[in-house]
Length: 288
Image (cartoon, rainbow, N blue to C red; front, side):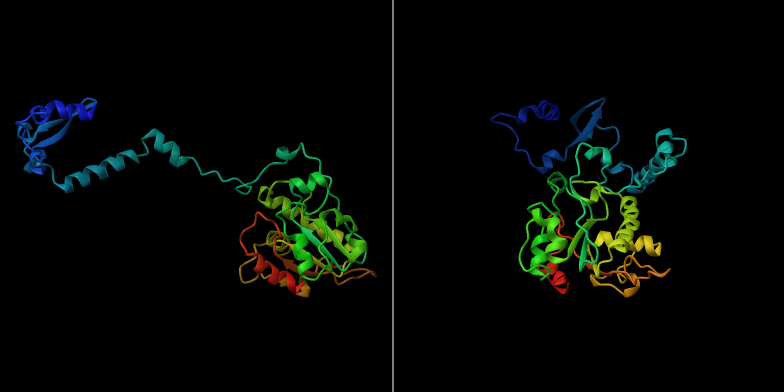
């Protein structure tokens, strides 16, 4: 619509042999004006107010400021409602998925535990493939079985289908902090993770391994929150072996006292986690 109005106003300058060449000086004689919903070019000389008498910028600034104040006025009902409505934050994580999302899945994964093991590996929760097949760390992109071998914990690379034989084969155990399956660990809530800490402590006290390996930073963050009542800081967190005061499954009372299992914090092995390079993960796992 705008281009048609320009053509009608400039008339003789379109498609005529005697047309006057258009340049910046030619267009400086015209201004856009509005009438209702249409816009057209009009000679500046035909305007009631000359260009040189246009309102100064300061007036425009004051006008804009006044308009802004009017817009933000409490008497303006839409804005008033917006300002008075508190921002609602979800208590769950950004990617949280309720249990109902995966209610159709049957979790076939069970713990691989036995008394007196050398080390029990604690994962976050079973993925969809792991839950369906019933074998731990069963996704092709997961690095667990590869890192378990390259770190020297097993003399060969085992298969996910051998997870149930790990206690007998190499005195190693497997469990998780949360039992319900999800596609990604980010779909769990912090509340679920924190509730799983007490379960881990009880399992450790029952089976009493020499050590537990935390497979993922988020697991240790939950353990720390529950134990210390606060979020772990950057200078407090570290991969590798933790202080003896952080041993898991401690039994300090009664005749059957036990100092607890030593804690090693390893990296996650999930293929969805791209925060560290494979060689960086290998360096941390090699200490174990």
